[in-house]
Image (cartoon, rainbow, N blue to C red; front, side, top):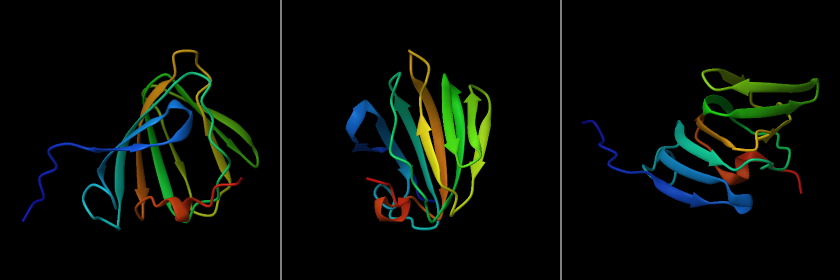
Length: 118
């Protein structure tokens, strides 16, 4: 039977970024995949991470910069990027107005699976 998801669960994170999880471990009890809408203010940055999951980032508004061991990639509205499990990456929003984007993680995102650097 299909599982209706009437609303996301908002997951608080430091730095002003908002995560609205629609499908995943928190909102739907799903471990195979997670789908979340993110809103990050201009100048937001998170620590580098080497996750145990693949992640598709679809940018809806603004620019998301993906720093990786080979340099940096700016992903603009209407574009997407695929990062693979085991790749060291760091996400930032360089535009003053921030960015809105959708993240799809396989398997589902979990804080302990992100392996964020301190």
